[in-house]
Length: 254
Image (cartoon, rainbow, N blue to C red; front, side):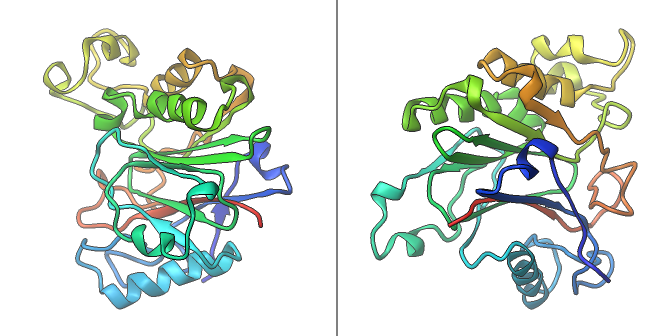
């Protein structure tokens, strides 16, 4: 089965960048992790997951992938090319965070999801990229806003230059939170699909969080693909338990 990816139009047009949202197809894992599962510790065979990760790297023509130990935080890892030394790669394995920003070429940033959002960020002026894991906990803690702030503070990025892509995730059709009054901040309640609904539009929440930090509306692209509705193409924790994690990746080309 062929590996398939989804791309964002504005990111695809830049020759100095490569990115892709991978579907669940084209890997080696068996059901219920079929087939391109890149998530460890879910019950899938480690050797199969590692082979799937190699397939992702090969598809991206990348030799230096970075997978975070995602913990549903608002923590952002900052990696600068000027801080590299001969041992820097050894220190990156299994670091716990939910986002990473860098100006290092040839470093493939990978986020793993199965209903949460992966949010890609790119400043073409400063040549800085980011990849963010934003589940509902991260969204409530404004991890996206934190990432934009860190790009500004650490690399001098102008938010008006940043291009953002919001990947496949739970859509407003399926993002149901029956206990939202306990789980979500009151500021989120206006994003319900209607006043009596338990369904939330997290795509709109993320767009607003980006705009509040100065990212231009025309620089924000939402994939508009609901993972639960499209579980034949993407892993969905809400649809299937257990299940795998699909990869969203971005890299500055060397």
